[in-house]
Length: 201
Ligand SMILES: Cc1cc2nc3c(=O)[nH]c(=O)nc-3n(C[C@H](O)[C@H](O)[C@H](O)COP(=O)(O)O)c2cc1C
Image (cartoon, rainbow, N blue to C red; front, side):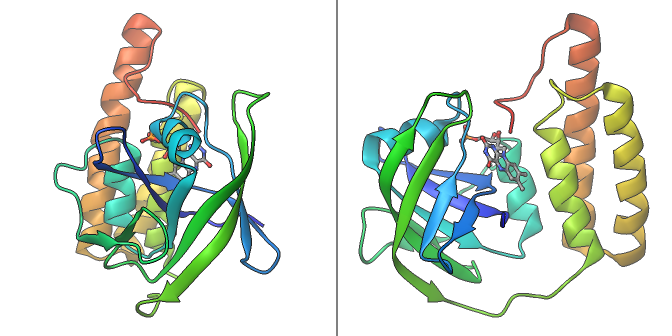
């Protein structure tokens, strides 16, 4: 089964890269299969360092901003205790990962990573339709180059209703950020046939 969360990896200059990722959960949370596109910074960092920290969080505003590279300030982080990595201080749970194997035969790599340490920091908010709607909108935002523009616009309109009905302020801000990004990215696609996005899921 796939779980959506946020992965931190270390860039070549030592800075921290924060990115949403949807790995497969294996062996009762003792292993993950990460599936980053080879064009992503996350892939390059995983190949170079073979370490990462994967987080379960309900902070969809962070997830949205990280998905579209609009993270103007890094969230609070602290050094992981068992690997060279960084933990999001506000995440619900974290899993320190050590890469076991990398299959780069496809554009979307398959990286098997063992959980070498993990901890719970706080409770998960619980099911909330607006939070899930922001996750869906963030995925759409990273796919403006590969999905038909009409589909994206229709899906964003549907998600907007859920945000309005069930979201708090953070969900409204996150969705607005994504809506503006999608609007600009689709305008670029229509005008030039290319995408303004960083990479696609
Ligand atoms: C919920 C969610 C899950 C995602 N899962 C993946 C994934 O499994 N693999 C991937 O390549 N991109 C995935 N993406 C898209 C990346 O987050 C996005 O392309 C990002 O810009 C890549 O950043 P990076 O270059 O810093 O690694 C996901 C996005 C969201 C919002």
